[in-house]
Amino acid sequence: MIKNRKTIVCILIGLVAAALVLTAGCTGTGDAGAPSSEQKSISIGYVLWDSEIASTNVIKQVFEKAGYDVRLIAVDAAPLYQAVASGDVDCTVSAWLPRTQKSYMEKFGDQLDLVGKNLEGAKIGLVVPTYVTIDSIEEMNSVKDRFEGKIVGIDAGAGVMKTTEDAVEAYGLDYDIVYSSSAGMASALKKAVDREEWVVVTGWTPHWKFARWDLKYLEDPKGVYGGEEYIGTLARKGLAEDDPEAYAILKRFSWTPEDMGSVMLDIEDGMSHEDAAQKWIDAHPDQVDAWLGKA
Image 1: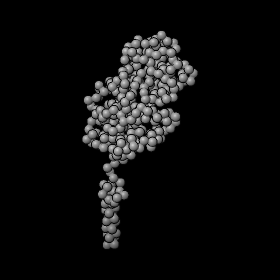
Image 2: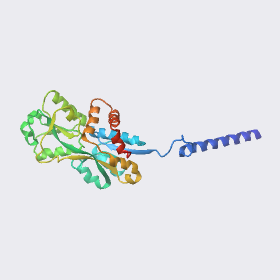
Image 3: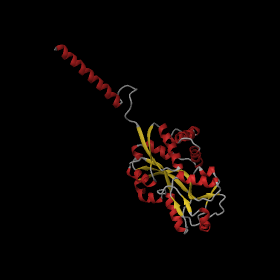
Image 4: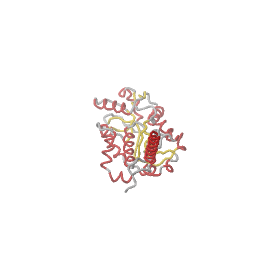
């Protein structure tokens, strides 16, 4: 009996010791090799435009270099703004302003932190191949048959599509808008260019299609599409206080249309999003260090 009691006591002592070791490992108070519970993390929302796929994958890898666990969330523009405003997503580098996503800023702007501009020189409008012999939106009705009465667009929630609806009304265009996707629009454009057929699509700069084909924007004398745009960085309210390091990285993040275009073109040529972003980062160490606050 006594022997059994001693055995039970030894087992209990062993279990307590094991529990203490496990506890030390979980709290980070054990040895230097124990994992820390203080893993930094950030969630980044984005829209599935080629431009935003490029920028979001680049900033993702920048945050990973800073030791963050990064979660990407792809959504349409309206739910993206709502998610950042509600705090369900920490940030986005996908805000096209001041015109393209104006309606979302009007609705959610007071619930968001506009961190800054991450790219200047952006533009939206109607785009055609350069062999198309008109130069203005005002001329479109006179050549409706050449375009088969269609404007090929992207997803219905995109700001450029709402602006295109406004343009159809403002210019009295007798055209149907074809809602598609960024990939669908590019596919229709490629098909038409390959056959030297007329096509008009919703377009924006930066985009790899301008490096691939000879294209032009149709003039917009009524100014429906606005002037020069910028791409902004938005954060949830409180991120600056909750995570000053993450906020500082977002504040410093900015690059050029040429930078973004090179990443987009690599993706279009078959490189994965991750590999294209990594290629750009490897080629621009000084710029990445500046974003990380090391320069």
